[in-house]
Image (cartoon, rainbow, N blue to C red; front, side):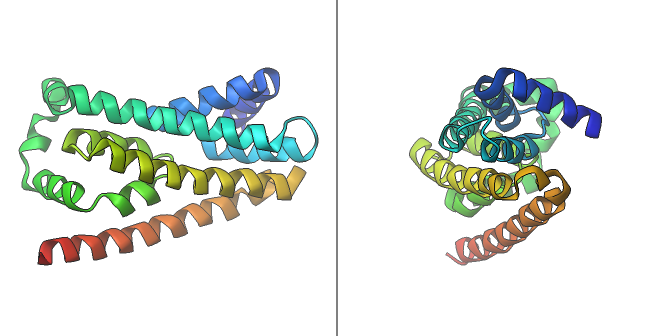
Length: 197
């Protein structure tokens, strides 16, 4: 993992904001890239004068939101039909999928918001939101709010930890797990309230 992260950090130092945007975009869109580590490293590089913190936060936010929207709109446009053709037909006919559709249609806010803190989960939620027809405005507003908090958390932690950001990555991972736990609790509460209606 360190070799892979080292390659991404070299890419980041070489291409700066363009690299940050590309990594943020593709991690939010679909690829399992180390976007949280890259964002924390960018914050640390900003604390050392290599980057501007404001530009880092803006570029990371832009890359994440554009990547989220790309996944959402592709799923909204081609979603279930395309996925059925490539082997997911059984998933779409299951009763569990129907429950997820019902939930996302009625109360998507907490799931979308909290999934922003776990880049490994976010793309799947974007696709599900697109397939299930979560309204564009709802998705966009909740996505932007969630991404603002995510970018501020990882970017500022990297900035304030400076050169020690890498040794404190477990703190960031634990923060992501806390957000996931809160998200699960909120989603469960929303689901139970939605079901009671």
